[in-house]
Image (tube, rainbow, N blue to C red; front, side, top):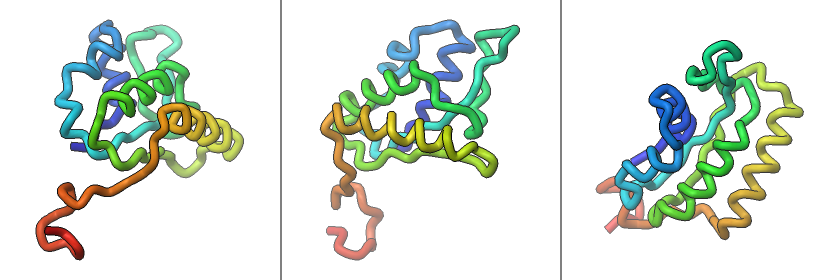
Length: 124
């Protein structure tokens, strides 16, 4: 399963629930890829979060990523989703923070053969 952490965060804001509690409702052992992206909260309605891919990743989402990496035993990839127009300075800052979170979690990208599609080169 691919788990989009920006969507988890957005849903938790909308439902006014703790993002960590929402994360734990997923079958985390089935997650093989995590997605992260920047966005912004609506200034008037803070329960409304827009997953824009054009704004910085919020600090709460870095915390969510750290928890997800620690809880998803089969995750082999983390994808940073961006859109054209993202300022390079935002990209650099977010990427550096992503590297820090993943380094602290001792995460290293990997692809396990049992997760390869049938018929893929080298798959059993």
